[in-house]
Length: 64
Image (cartoon, rainbow, N blue to C red; front, side):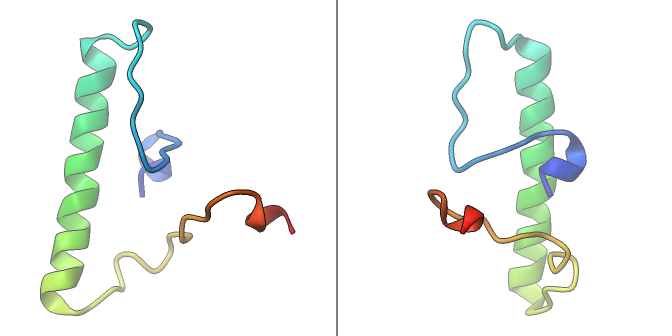
């Protein structure tokens, strides 16, 4: 879901001096959309709005 909004996101956000207020604000708005979609899915028990998303993988298991 974050990738669809232009962010290659992992399990953490590491801001640096290269990130300005605009980038951090855009990231926060994208997170709001994602969390809202996840919350809706949990509330309704329907995961249709999430099914096109790939499940996060750790390490290099996805390359095997």
